[in-house]
Length: 430
Ligand code: 4AD
Ligand code: MG
Image (cartoon, rainbow, N blue to C red; front, top):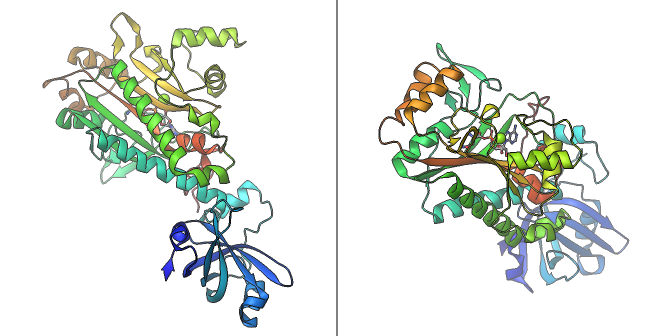
């Protein structure tokens, strides 16, 4: 019977065959312990000299790292392993012998590992991070589908920029100038006027020159947009969504969290509601914490965000930033037009901003004024104004950065490990 490591619990006491690779091995004169991986998980195979043919034992003793094989044996309980089962190996059929696999069980430098990312992905730790990423993706679709959202795919090639023009990747679109999308938001606003509640999930490109542990050049963003939803209602949706993905990861990625040594007690209480603090209060809090030179009107950097997050056990919303430092489409606070109805959600434990969101300007005249101030002209932006011309309604939306969320839940400290093939300032390969 052919099966996979993820399913061995269904085969206790039975003889099965698994297609696998050798991750690692240990052997003595009489016994060989094979650490097997098959993509679905990791499992130990035990080869006992006296129980198998001599040829099989010699094969097991000499098998090299990353050699592929079909391995057959009996599945038995093993309470010491995280999986709970191991295989008592009976026979091994080598498929392909790997020679001199570059990533050995010893420690390697980060650049070496990044150069070998195509192989590094096979490691237990990287496997765990990618499984957590996958669970966040799965839970995202579940959350939005269960709540009546329609998935709409905005274009990647675009003529308009949502988040300012400094970080755009320029490209040629035949004779025209085009960009790779920085955010699908403007299109999602159009979609919300057609479908009510929508979400997108796609790649985003930012030519950011920042070389930090939170910045990627290409990253994935989940962007919901909701008609007839104001800023406060949007914050409730955000905290419910984030709580849902955290609880889904806790429930469905126990082995992975254990592999990563993640302190899950810090994740268990991540449940809505989340605290909210205004930008004004955040400035005050920072001053109290010794950031004496930060002034009202300045944007927060990573050290500021981390310092603010330290005061809370859950993610914290920083709301109502000065209009000056935020995007052109954000709706001014009706009681105080120098600030906008927006919030950034800052993750605990120093993982930084995971969501940026806002209520959008729905008034045509005000949006026209913003166009002038921001010098937005031409066909690329004309259509967006029309959304305010025909049955404009209050609407809000947000964008969650997938990789920063993966970093936070996995407890890895650099986003380069949270995406299969990271694009970084100095790295386009592999
Ligand atoms: O705050 P941002 O720039 O918001 C927007 O793009 C809005 N248009 C979203 C919307 O309202 N529909 O980006 C949203 C999130 C950030 O909070 C962060 O998590 C992530 O995207 N992000 C990055 N992640 C990795 N690398 C980068 N360079 C990132 N830039 C933003
Ligand atoms: Mg932001």
